[in-house]
Length: 328
Image (tube, rainbow, N blue to C red):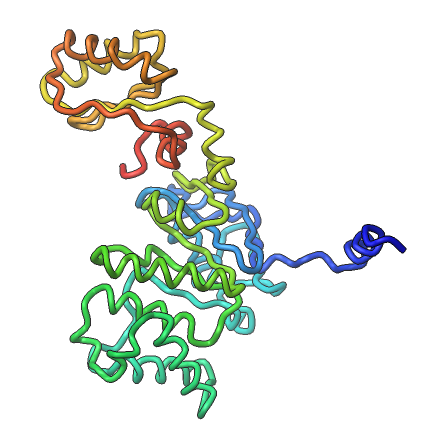
């Protein structure tokens, strides 16, 4: 039998790889507000999946359903093949949840915090001690393991929060905005830790409103807004949704709205979004269009401070899909 035939035979006989997480048509309402509106996606082993969207987009509500903290009004979740819900204790053992709010005891040391939460997970003795050492090394806190966490910086507390979620070696790690409010050095340390996790085969669900984090970490990204997934795919796949259009950003003072109105009349301009002192233009062939854009904005009464041509990125995709900036 040829090598190719052997490979084809092995491929045909190998069982399909199961998804770690499957979320199907999730809906969650709060009164008249539909916070999650038909959300569906899956995550495979070793994959980092990003939910990218502004504050209030539905990210935290979505992961609260997935983690079994709150029920969905409709839709289903399975984790490692088990149905998930508020009463599904066994399924929750497969999840490590790192919430936005810190879940640590300030009077205890990093090691004592990890030991406490490890015992809650049923871990004991040498296996727990060995796992604590591994986690401390991963989150770069081995040298501060005996210090009370009330003495830690915000970034160190965030890293310990991640370590607690990792301690029982979950199949799926859920990280909800883990870098909010931390310094750049700690933020980079957190991102490096997440990169190492996916490289080790763990499935990671990562929510953020920082475009650069999603671009750096995530194998696939779902852009979420108003409780709905607007688009999903790899970074490259999402950027193709802009149709190859460019962006020009004008920062200045004066007649901003008048300038926006005038610019919408230019043939090269597809869309104009006004945000206080900033105009973001979606245009065809920005280098060729920029001179006319500057002339038109100035003539309309806008005093320009800065003109920037931007290549398409995930923020461009979000703007293209929703008509607003990611930070709104």
